[in-house]
Length: 251
View 1 (cartoon, rainbow, N blue to C red):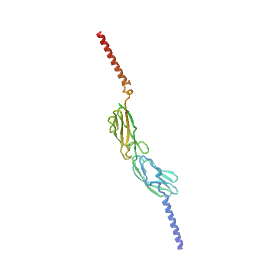
View 2: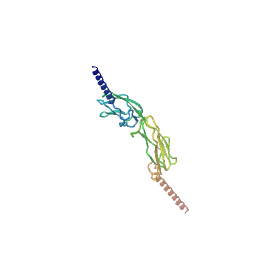
View 3: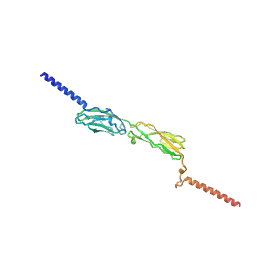
View 4: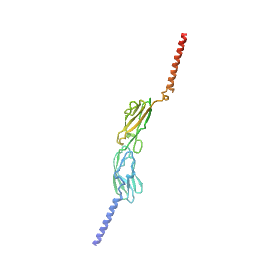
């Protein structure tokens, strides 16, 4: 009777060990980083944010914690789930999340860390003409997905560069054309709560001479150059007429 008890205990112990091992492996570790780091304005990278369910039912869900705006936890297919989406502006911070496998009730805790995202300043090069009126540069920035950044998290810009003989720019980005030539302006954008500082943008500006056909016009659309030519001809005609009259008076 004692031998049977020992054998039963050994069998039970073996079964318990197998059960524990299965339970530990049922909720497999995430593929890649168990504490994924993502950036505002950048789509989550699926290969490093996949989670596998080994349970009988194979369903993973969030049992505790809140995801940042713009991010979801969704089913990929089969026993695979993952974080997807793009963290919205203003969501920088740490997000502790608890995942549960309904197949075996195992849980896994991960922390989604959202960092400020990259920005790229966009401003085309400029071609101007001597005599052009002052104008404002209108840069904008794009996020890591290439979308334009707008709203309360829009970056602010500082300006520099220019040439006093060609074109100048003030602190607000207002450009004044001076003379023929070429020069460069610089645009910088500091970091804010949602985006990192941008790489400095260099803007090339070329100023050309104004062609004769581009002379200013009068209010009714008549070319100023043509008007001046007519006035000159009229004055010349009056001078000739005066000369003839003086000759006749002498005669």
